[in-house]
Image (cartoon, rainbow, N blue to C red; front, top):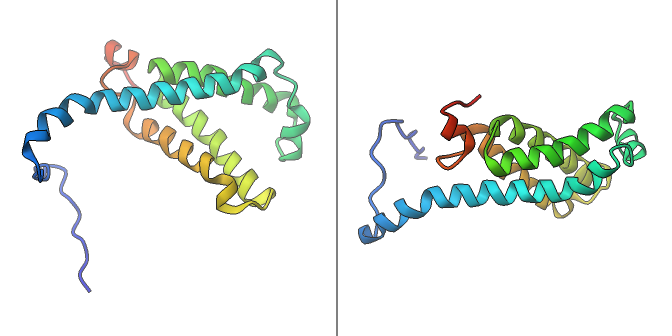
Length: 154
């Protein structure tokens, strides 16, 4: 059985089937990263907005998940979603914000899949969002981010 050889980091990019599209791909690539980051950030900001208005509202919920004391974890959840969303959207401290939101999402995967017994069908959106936020943990905010403008990243 044949195995795939790893791609060397200095390997040339693959040849396009339609080379005339190369300029289009080069032009939209940075935009696609920005859109993904900004919309992920806005989504977290909006999801965290009601939580940040009453950071202790979810004390019972987080304690039922095993995060005790809830008086610490509930505001941490609210802050991670709200402030993490803002930071992700603007691309500032992107890796930190993305790591926090990824952890929150992995907890929701565990909640839906295991605790609620919904399996993949209940956890699929959290898996998708966790994959998106993990991309920014690994790659940073991208070319159109505050991190890049400051020429500093964690």
